[in-house]
Structures are given as C-alpha cells and as structure tokens.
Length: 113
Length: 113
Image (cartoon, rainbow over all chains, first blue to last red; front, side, top):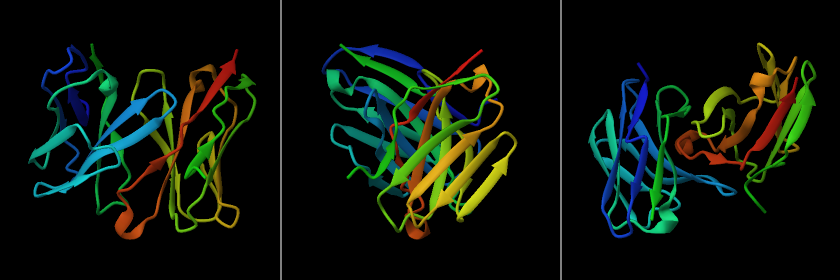
C-alpha cells in the first residue's frame, strides 16, 4: 500500500464549484504540505501544517483553504474554483525528527472549466 | 535572481554514458540539498540528499556539493532509458526552516538507446 495517498486522482469541475482534495498518510510523519505544479512554473507551496493545531500559508495560498483533521489527514479546498487553478496538486509529508525530507503523494490532476 | 536555477534541457545522452545535471542556488544560508526524479505526470521521487561539501554516492547516482560556489550537481553513471525523466533540485535552509523546500524548475533528461 502507498504511504501517501491522494483522492481523487483526477477531477474535472466547473468554475465556481467548491472542491476538496484529500491526502492521507501512513508514514507517521508530523508535517504535511500541499503543492501545485504548473508547466514552466515548477512546484509551489500552497499550505503546510506542522501538526494538527498548526496551519501555515505558503507562497500561493489565495483561493485555497486547508484542514488538518488528524495527524494523518490533510485536505485542501478550493472554495470557488477558477480556471487558473487548473494544475497538478501534490501532497507531501515529512518527519521533523528525521531531517524533514519530503515524500510526495501520487498527485491529483485538477481541471477547472 | 531566481532562488534555485536549473537548465531546463532537454539534456540528451546515449545509453551507458554519464549524465550530469546541474543546479545553482542564491541563498548562502542554504544547508540541505535534494534531488528528485519526476516521470511525466507522476509525483517527484526522492533520489538522494546531501548536506556536506563534497561527493555522496548511492549506486549509480553521485551528488556533488560546493557551497562556496553555491552549486550542486547530480551525476548518473551508466545511464539507462529508464532514467529519462525530469530531475528537480530542491534546497532548504535547515534549522528551524527545514520545512521550506525551494524547487528548481527541473531539467529534462533523455537517455537514448
């Protein structure tokens, strides 16, 4: 079984819709991250969480919100999706006790029409 | 100046050759350096990391770090067609900022049979 899972893997939605992307991990890591990847722009950090009670904005948090429901679960929400949020979204985890090396989930391909 | 720079490529090498991938970074306070491999449409996969000046070898991969020159490289010996992917360089400041990985945009490597 994969250590970091993301659901859904692919999603097509319409402008204005609310959508949630979910991430779960069995690695026992305390830190979790959401990134988006766009062609030519690389990976950019949206939000990160050091533990259940700690949520922080990354470099491109506008238009997104997150929820850390448990140490193993971190969800990303788009309250009102817009076409320029079409991208590949990755969840990552790291262990603050082990050099914080980040491990990525399989990704969610999101298309906003 | 971009924080982490990589030649976008494509870098094309014949099977069995050595592939050399380069990365420069702007923040002299950077302490940890990571190489990820990403196949098209897939998630980044950690290859190796390096903290100290010099070389670090892991199988066919060698990471080289020169902090004075703010330069990190990845050598792939005996390149195989399966090594064809985009290689991402990532840097963090370490210490309390371990979480903050800054990624380059990646170098596309093609290994020709």
